[in-house]
Image (cartoon, rainbow, N blue to C red; front, side, top):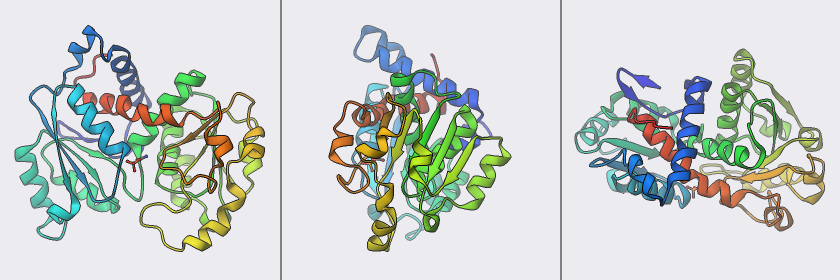
Length: 311
Ligand code: CP
């Protein structure tokens, strides 16, 4: 989302397909140049400081942003939501404007998406969504990069989601509309995606189908994707587990996909709940590449935020 001359990265739905493509291409090019003399040209954050705010725990998001910012020549400063009591100690608009005087960009992980949008409204530097309860756009940029490394261009291909309809799924829906691939979603009816999300996808002309049958969703798909049954901020653990058991990605379900299908999971995984050991440790599993690609895809995002994409 551009706000004046500011470039925020809040949701994939706010982008046109060619912009997302240029960010992915930039991330891939930077990945290729990493640890070679050519990487010098990628020091687009030279002299810049990026604040990373975490209200929730993180391994991948924190590490990939910290290392990525360092690789691009910048410095990161990590603060927890507890330290700054975001939205409690002072108005979000004051925190956003004060932080903008110190930092050149701000990445935020917080559950309340409306507060992220409020923060970005007042920030005077680019703001990046590092996960909210509503969406996880950096994750899905890495997922698409991983798909394309293993399977070629994602346009026209079929991705199947089975399990809970959470924030990662929402970003997959946004991506399917912008990058023109088919998305089949299998969830229990009780945990179906929000009607407004699916209505948005249809309005945008996306090829998104919903079902309660995981085998129908996965049939012949190029990728099978799932996530934890209980995401950050969710309650009703036992009820969710009971509802989601039939949506587990196990060898039988994966076999219903294309024989060369890949398995994706943003991690952390709950082994033998949403995915079996047999699947996550199989050659079809791309989860470690997917975690690594957070680093590379986010470098593309950071380069875009500073209008410094050099593919
Ligand atoms: N996938 C993901 O966002 O991982 P973390 O919660 O460890 O950052």
